[in-house]
Image (tube, rainbow, N blue to C red):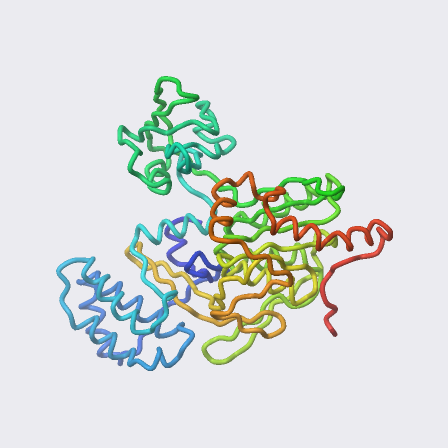
Length: 446
C-alpha cells in the first residue's frame, strides 16, 4: 500500500502493538451548520495545524466506542482546539493530546508523523533497512548481531550472527540501546549507511550498505524431540502483515517433518493486526466462534472459523503477562473452543480494538472503536486469560529465559516442558488411533 493510500485507509489495531483489519476510511462529515462550515473551511484551509486537529476531532466524534466520551463535552473540545492560535505544529499536536487525555483511554492517542510511519511499517511487517537484528550482550555489553535476514544488504556483504557492531555512520553505539542502534540502521529505501564491526576480536572493518525494503520475520519454528515426542514448536512475535503467510509455512513445514503435536508460543507477543489474529485462528480452528465484538451502539458481531484449518493435531499455547490484544483473541478462541491447552501465566487483559487513521499531514490517530469478548462471552479487560495450567516463573527466571532465546523450547524452559507433558496423553491416543481427529473446536450447535 502506498503512503497516499495508507492515509486513506483505516486499520483495526491495538495500539500497544494491537490488532488490525483494513477497511476504507469514509469521508468525515462535520457537525457544523452549512454556513458555519463554509467559514470554518476557509479558515482551516489557511491553517493546516487546525485542519489536522479538526480531522482528528471528527474521527473521535464519529468512531469512539464510548458515545459519552467519558462523560466529557466533546463538542466543547472542538471549540477549544479551533479557537486557539498555535505558534507551531508541535503546539497544535500537544493541544490535541491534552484533549484526548480527557477520554481517559491510553489506547486512543495521537501519533506524530514519525510515530505513525513507524507503526505503519511495524504492522505491515516490513522495514527499510539493512537486514540486521541486534541486541546488547548481557556479559560483554557489546551490541551484537543476532539475526541476518536472508537476501538482505547485510547478508550480501557477508555480515554474520555474532558480529559486534561498533559504529553506525561513524557514531559509536557504546551508549545506545539495541533499539537505538536499530533506528540508526533504518532509513529511506536506497539510502546508504556505513557499518563498522568486528568479528571474533579482529580489527574493525567497515562496509557501506544500501538500505532496502525488507520483510520482517515474525514466525520462528523448529521440530523438537522431547521424551520421544516430535513437537512442532512455533514462536509468533507479532501479528503483522506477513504473520499469516509465515504461520502457514511453519505449520506445513513441521507437518511435513511428521510433527505429532504443536506448541504455539505467544509469550511476550503484544498483539498486532486483528485480521492476522482471525486468519491465524482459522489455521488452527476448523469450526466455532473466534471473537465477539460490541460497538459504540451496542451492536454485537461475531467472527467464526471457516473450516480452513491446516491441522487437527494436539496443540498447546504458551502465554504470559505480556501476551496481549491479538494474542488474547487467538488464545481465547483456542481455549473456549477446546482446541488447545493454555500453559503459562495470566495474559495482559486488553479487550479493546482500535482503528488507526492517517491524517492529511502524515500524522495519525488511533481510536478505540469496539470492545471484544472471547467466544464464551468473557470480558478479559484488566483480568486477562487464565491458563488451563499455570506455571509461574520468577522475575529472574523469566529475564534469563528471554535474554537468551536459545533457552526457549529447551529443557531450561519449564513452561514449554509442562506444555509437552500436557500433550503427551493426547499424542499417545493419536498414535493409537491416527485416523481419529483430536482437537478441531466446537460444533456450531454446541
